[in-house]
Length: 338
Ligand SMILES: CC(C)(COP(=O)(O)OP(=O)(O)OC[C@H]1O[C@@H](n2cnc3c(N)ncnc32)[C@H](O)[C@@H]1OP(=O)(O)O)[C@@H](O)C(=O)NCCC(=O)NCCS
Image 1 (cartoon, rainbow, N blue to C red):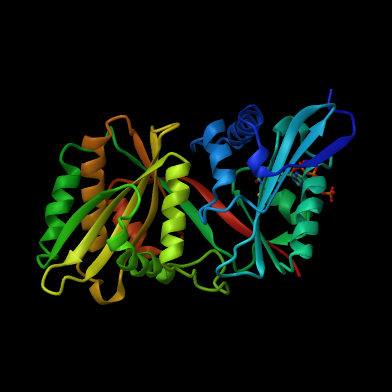
Image 2 (cartoon, rainbow, N blue to C red):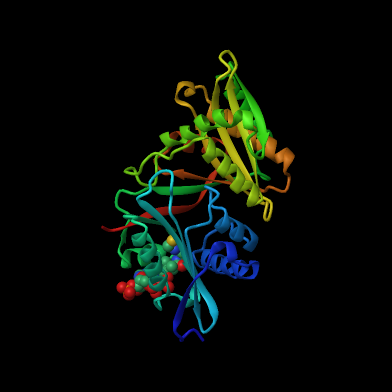
């Protein structure tokens, strides 16, 4: 088995069927296991929806399937950002551990490169787990991680947290944030809040990025709506805790947690950001402690919450460690050498 020719097929993400998405997810699961990782493996339906509705609500720009003797052995996709960093392309790909080192990865990469070149994308990024085969393979294929970010994935064990921890941290943080109140929001942003949400999302641009040379992420009302639309279509329920400065009425901070309704056990922490003028009042800790308190009551099936932090994002890491988060994996960014 698996000695035949590698066939690569380009697929329109909107034509992808659930059976194939299930097979793709099975390859991801096998890869995660082979890397000895304890991170959530995607389910077929989540994968299908994500490829059709990337975070900007567009389908991914390229999707390829690799088969040997008719069996699906790998897949790759390319996302081409439009609103900012339009000189870049982001690649993700996985080859089944039993089909590796036979040229499947190279054949998939060649397709991604063709698309990136056709579309005038000069920078090609990929990320990989530090424990898997990805790093050595990317280096062999011409990528480098020089000057690029490493993300630590931290997990909060929601079910086994010390009793009352989040309430204590919430009370402590509130002692420094007497002028602020928190507001809860579930699902897409109501129309009358979209403009305010733009500033809250844009505040994430102060966080360290995977490539310090990249452009800041552009946020406007359409982007907020596109993000919310993508999440709703992907059956991701978005929980937002917002902080408001009571005396001025200004929105000061945002923390978001997503629950994948296809697999709700491990929730995913999206951005937590405090706008500059309101930093220094422990709003990060306040919003996150409140989120965990809220989610553990609202969604008892959520056993854990995972969050990605750049390893030099010291403030956010300190908050997450106080919440009891522990590191479960590291993901390294690579870029194809010029
Ligand atoms: C990265 C990945 C897709 C490569 O798939 P693959 O089918 O093994 O790739 P290929 O057989 O085409 O190998 C490509 C090159 O990498 C090298 N390589 C692959 N695995 C390697 C390893 N573990 N150590 C050293 N070199 C390795 C190969 O020798 C080859 O180089 P060469 O042609 O100069 O000999 C696969 O390892 C994988 O799925 N990893 C997990 C997911 C991941 O990290 N993806 C990163 C991209 S988003």
